[in-house]
Structures are given as structure tokens and as C-alpha cells.
Image 1 (tube, one colour):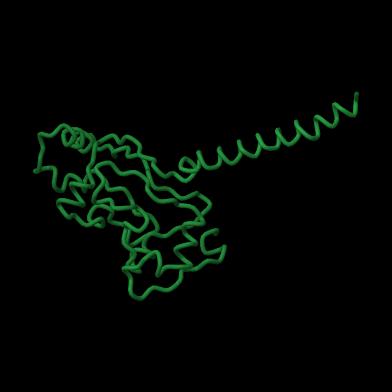
Image 2 (cartoon, rainbow, N blue to C red):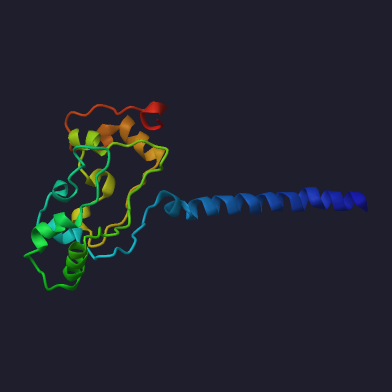
Length: 189
């Protein structure tokens, strides 16, 4: 009798249990991947801002608003003063511009929610990439077509290494581009 129970456990229960565990792991890994990678993350912002209008239809250069992107490590989110360069005159009666004006008059920064983020333990410098001619869309997607900005690419180590190791494949618009560093300490400082 004991041998039959042991045989049943080894032949049926153990393989079935291992199959369920493996299947659960694989499904969880792939189903939760967009959440882990941030793909699709599109938070509601305090002010509805259309990149499709500003960067697309009006052809405002990214660096007009994101002033530090070519100079420093961070792209910086524009201050309310930058917005008011135009909106102290343009479309002042629109509800979102009224909200913007209120932030400006109260001297409060707009509490934008960050969308694109790499882990804190990884070093990334925007200016190095921008000054090499790498277009914003290579990492951030076609912002000019986004009414609401969301993360469309992975900001993972594999994604960065893929681009650093094969820049010609990932950045076909650049004629002369060298491989980026792929040693650990280039990003893990």
C-alpha cells in the first residue's frame, strides 16, 4: 500500500506540481513583463498636455522645453515659466491653460508625473546621447504623434546593451556611429 502511494506521488503528483509551478512562473513572467518594463505606463497628468500639438503640429523642438537635455544628465521637465512664454498670450481662455496660469501665479511647480525612468542604480546621461545625434524618438517613441505620452520602449539593461552593441541596426539614421560602452561600470557607478 505504501509503495502505491509513493508511486502515485512520484509519477503523478510530482510532475503535475512541477508543471503547475513552471507554467505559473512562465505566465507570470510574460504577463507582468510590460508592468516591470514600464511599457504602456501612461499616468494622468495634472494638466493635459498634447505633445502631438506642440512637438507635432507646431513643430516645437524638444529642447525648447526640455532645456537641459543637451547639457546635462537629465532632460528636465519644463518649469511653468517655459510654458508661460507662449501661454501668457496664446489660448489663455482654455481650461488647461487656466490651470497652468494658476500654477504660475501661485509660484508653484506643476506636479508632473515622471513617465520614463531607469533604475536608480543605473547611470544615464541624456546629453551624451543627444550630442551624438541620437533622436529622442529612438528611446521615447514618436512623441510628435502622442496626444498623451506613455512609455513605449523598454528601459532595461538588455535594451540599452542591444543599442550599444548594434547601433547601426538600432539607429539607422546615423551614418557614423560607434558602439557604445558595454562594460559594467559605464552604467553601474
